[in-house]
Image (tube, rainbow, N blue to C red; front, top):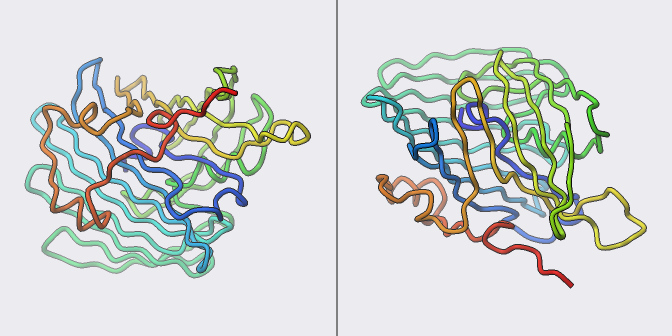
Length: 269
């Protein structure tokens, strides 16, 4: 899935802040291969205060060589980030595959289709497993110090399988009101690098607590792939095909991509 192909594309909030609104993040990422634009990713995170559930919705379209890859994901977790369900669809040229998953405790039930045949699978996953889409949420909730590895069991949505991974905060620097973390992540035999922008709590008593944060960029060195959060949709989609009907079906409307720190940077006092 796009979240794993490009590392950590997500965000983190204090739960108090998350309860305050419905859409917590929405943004467009430009995808480049060896420095050249090859596609885009659109991502939205929401919190339902009544149901106390988080929703992650992602759409990706890239062209790598002669392959046009299009993927969509809708994932749901409770307020402890325990997985509830997800629906994943992948189209590579004309080949279409899909997975619908539901979770009850440590039991994961899958319905997989290749467009012709439907198969059912049931798996037991390690306690504490979560959808890979929510890795940053889970990681930052733990308030990890620099260079302390966080070992986790993540569900790779594109496979319907769980894998052990490891992530850690390598460094941080202050850029205006933002604290920018460099995060290293190892998952499924691949290494990823992410830049996380966090907005500190304005209360001086709440040192090292962040009320909001988002991923600015990711890099997969082995694949020579990068993603960059951009201020406007056209900076990500220029020269690319945008399937508006699919986006409306997935998001409810074509996302504007305006709920993020690049489009709306925090104001200096």
